[in-house]
Image (cartoon, rainbow, N blue to C red; front, side):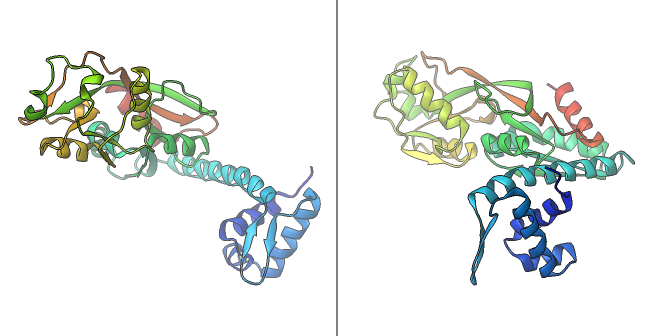
Length: 295
């Protein structure tokens, strides 16, 4: 179709705001101009994009489908604009990263410090969220790269993956619970004990559920928490057996014991994920090199 791309620009703003008035303000045109452009686009595509009434406006199913593609295109254009700005000098720019709270605290902090010392004028924007959400946003071109817990089977299309660090998940508890268990307890021996895990919406929790299922057991936690730090705190005060990455246990920790399980929890890894179709800015490339060289 030979459609004027300015119509898609108008549609993007109208769909973003769900308001022709606010779209007109963003584009510095009249509301009538926005309405005419949308009507023209609808006629050329032969579909209805918006359902309009006196109270509100919403996208049709076809409108939602078109917006999902148009918004990705605009995000990639914004990345390109940042890259052009960043090529002018290494002294300025921005790096947009997605990572979970756990990865930020136990892996990224030292690298962020090192990069900031080398490039103090480059802004670092970090979005803290579960790894699966970061993967989806990287695929959609909404950030420069993500540092995520890698799924065993990477099924996200449109991304490149570089593994940078392996880590081990462990079961931890206090002496009071450990002394009631065999020296090398099995998963079955943990039955009846209060278990402490992350919430079900995390990749780590899904991984644990699958591991328990492989042992023909069902993981039924007493406590489901939002962060690894909270799991460690709950274990420390004697509330049960928790599952965390080994790096999360403080080196000088005296109250927590690591259980030597018969069924060794499989090792996992952290990786850098980038969008295959988005060029990397110079600051982003430098930050990624810091991570890769430090592995």
